[in-house]
Image (tube, rainbow, N blue to C red; front, side, top):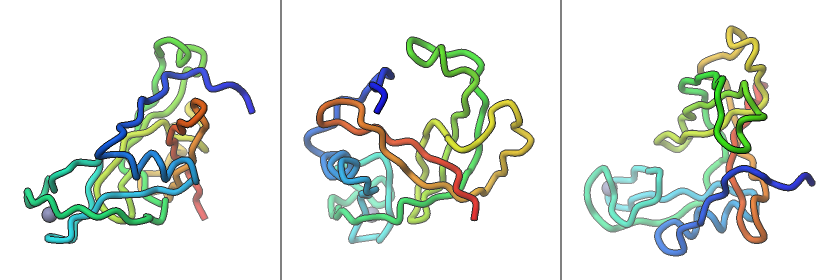
Length: 140
Ligand SMILES: [Zn+2]
């Protein structure tokens, strides 16, 4: 495996720990409020929908749909050599939305990237014990 040379996260050891731990196993763990039943991202100790602290974690499907995207023609640091690349917002199947670098698309043919395309999360090892999430179009 090529060495990961992008900026890596410092996983939150408290509120977001189940999310980062899930990544080590290739799973998407999401927080859900047991009071209003809504899923949210990023992880918080209080539900952003109803304000309660009744948060539970569950293993999500790992699938979502492309909400919108942009082709990046400039990068910083190790991202400089990746241009052009595609950043995107993914609507999680279970609710809420995440930002990502999108894979499985051709940044030189943005007209072929379809809003609503089915996507799946994948995790790159970014450090000894750290994994970084990316999403990939997996049109079926
Ligand atoms: Zn709630």
